[in-house]
Length: 333
Image 1 (cartoon, helix red, strand yellow):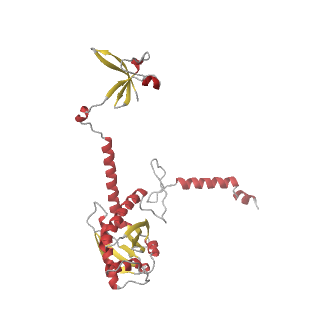
Image 2: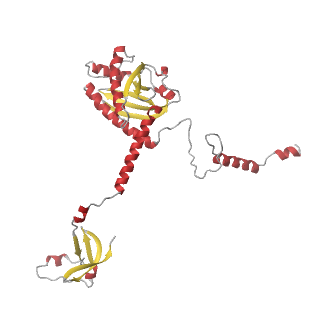
Image 3: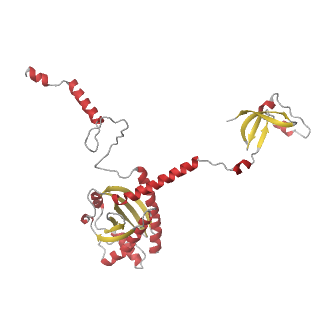
């Protein structure tokens, strides 16, 4: 190996220095949306973002959306119970955001799928109902006892039509949960039995998916309601703005304490007391009218002034203008 080749070989210290420089540059390098590097960043806030698993709802937003959907499920349970004339218990299994392609892969086969549109929102939503649950609902609507139907088959046209009535009731309750939103009307635009054939949204579109467990009689099966996030983004932002406004209003109201003139006329029980030295039980039992209790010297300078039973001041007993008075000496915190 020649001298020139030896000069081209970096030492371990040189390699470590280059790696440290590269790491520091990668950590500090920040680029704008135009691709320009930002060197001066006095108030720049950088947050990591996972493009493969995007999160469109913050924890604060997701909490309020969950609370809203819990109310929706509670009202839906009552409505279906009245409609079917039997107890229908619905619980939330999961509320999450997931890409459209991943969602349709989780839909079991067979499943009765309704595609719907909510006016005036954009996008197409999906309502997936387990066939056993759907057939149990049909059995109840036809006068049956609502026992679980064990058949593994697709629904007939007549059964689909009857289940569509229940689906419209579910969507009606879902639309009613969004307060301060424009009047929304849901309409069914199609039906399917296999999630693989669905092409209602782009593969990478984020869906808000609500999974519910419906129990009626001995039947307990799943229902899924999914709608594109971009369709309800405005509704979620409006809901968050309302909650923040209410929180700010409550905070400002609690800070601005008002004093009313009527408060000045409220009576406050005030007493001046002395704390005596400890006496025995026999001394207390032997007390009678006309006895004298000897007070310790200097007690008049240690008068306790209490307001509504709370010790507020230390004072001294005296005479002023031929009246017994207490001079306040010290405030007790």
